[in-house]
Length: 586
Image (cartoon, rainbow, N blue to C red; front, side):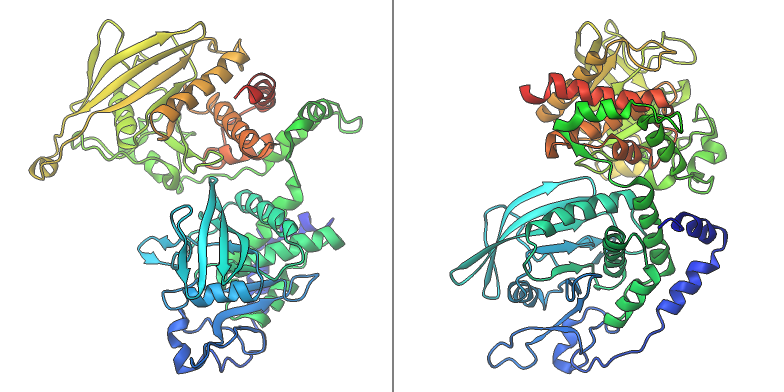
């Protein structure tokens, strides 16, 4: 592993290294696939070419009187330490759902890892083979399955299922990763967090049957995941990685494992991330001793742990190219940015959909940020310019944002124009379409809040002819007033944590739409708010603290967030304050 960083540098310099490795690893002897090719099994294979070899296919107990009922498109896969530790399976199609459950039962598998959405773009990738509603059993063949619980996180679900056959019952777990579309790769840190959760359940059922891993074809994404899993296991045992060796082994076990060179590169990037970042979480009861340890200076480097962590984050941040952010650089949109260096990537910006006039575009300088339990939970944006105030209200309306958090209070000026109605105005029109009406307001020592009703006038001819009615929507603005311009942190930490709690209470009462988080330039302060919210959610949900990963999550689509050491350290302070003053009083 000591040589791994320089090897990664080489692969970045010479693209051909990984391409050659990938091509060589995919050349291997082929084995017979006689069973898979039988006519009776044709409908059981969703992809004609991606079928199991005969020598290591999973053989089901035959059903009496049904020829070839011992076949399922699934193969045994060895881990580094244990033979047949995994089964790589095709995602069930409508003909194979009951076979899939037979396999889970017969193999005594207690953990299922699912890496595909049920529905991706316009195609069914895999039939939903579990019940949708809690405590309502469904029959699959002679096996009854009941959904006992479902926990949602930003990138995956954890479902607990009760499986019953005749008089015997088992409780199994399905971990379903939902953010890996078939033609792209996910974020390494998100997949590593998922793998950490899978490990928890694998430890829980150590002496049971193989772990079942499937995507839609049981090859591309499944192969990539298994290769990452095996190499992380190898690193724990022998302090080394062998991606090429294990990829070759996978290819000999099942056709099409690790589909593209991009997936192959992604395996390396994920292992590099694991190598650099290591394990960064700790239980919440160890918080105060961890913070003590993190503030101690290392005698050799002269840096404390906070600085080392922040340095790692900065070194590992993704760089966005102008091509990634083409929308914001178009001539008609350029003057809608306060700073052309801070432009959102097109894949992760909220598009405006309300038609206002022919001169308006779908662009606003805003970017989605994932929360801990919901993907795209926050929208970070800058203080609107004179010409973009109507776009701001379009953003609130189009994306059902019922919460706006304003982390600054600049005096009204041409640079920072007021963008909501004053209390004595009651009602104000922004652009040809939106009218904002004050419903109520409350002012506390460091926080001000206003509830508004947004009325939309339909001006697009096509919408008018279709008889579209735009219903009014409600939103609440929360503004912190103890964070003066030029200050890196607010004068009252309690006010900011209280603001987070007020937002949560309001969302519980109304709805969980995206939260707009706004500062003067859309980068300072916003990152602190979002990262602290993510970290606090993790404390509440799992009793763990992981500020490092929370900050990495927030910086994915806007690397300028959490822009300095002070902001990074302040995220820890906010979590500590929450834990000391609010955690047990909930």
